[in-house]
Image (tube, rainbow, N blue to C red; front, side, top):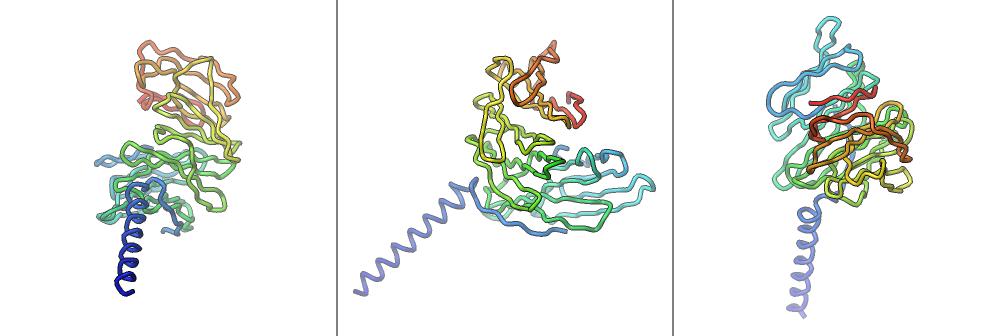
Length: 286
């Protein structure tokens, strides 16, 4: 009986170790999350600067430092210094208020935790910061889509070649969205509706994800290959017609119901990832 008990215990320990490996390594993109209260493109080594929407504040940030200044007197109002195992991977100002979003990756021996900080330079408030734990090492937040009217934030997290989206709402409820793809290049949110837009770099299609969990493909003029460029404050959606892989030859504007029209034809195709549209509907090429 003693030998049988020992064998049963050994088998149970082996099964638990297998489950842990599957959850922490093979299934890392579906890892759990917690929430905690913590005091424009990600930096790549040097310092980068960015003004708030009305230029009342200026942010200077690098991989481990973020400083915010009031432009009226050039006084420093925020100074965030990260630890050696942390890096900033994303920073942006909201398009219609003086509120900044900064993403942090914290790397551990076998996993990474990502956190999205909300920074209000006008108050000392500390909003709840969405935090996703147990991700594969090197995971990072690469894009954030915020709806100014519904107060829903969608967070794009990339780990290696795979990407996934988490969503948090006004009640600080954080959950992963199951979108049927690991190949998301860009996300956007509508302003007046709780709708997430995203594109799939494999199928070359753009999709809309609704609050009730429904997904629908966004179609424009019968085009088969599209990339998401973004959406403006009036919920106009901007798509790029793809040629030669990820190169855009035309820009289309319309609504998610499919009523799109071509608004610009490019003389020379341009990389989809280098075209963007701002809150006011201005298209820029970087």
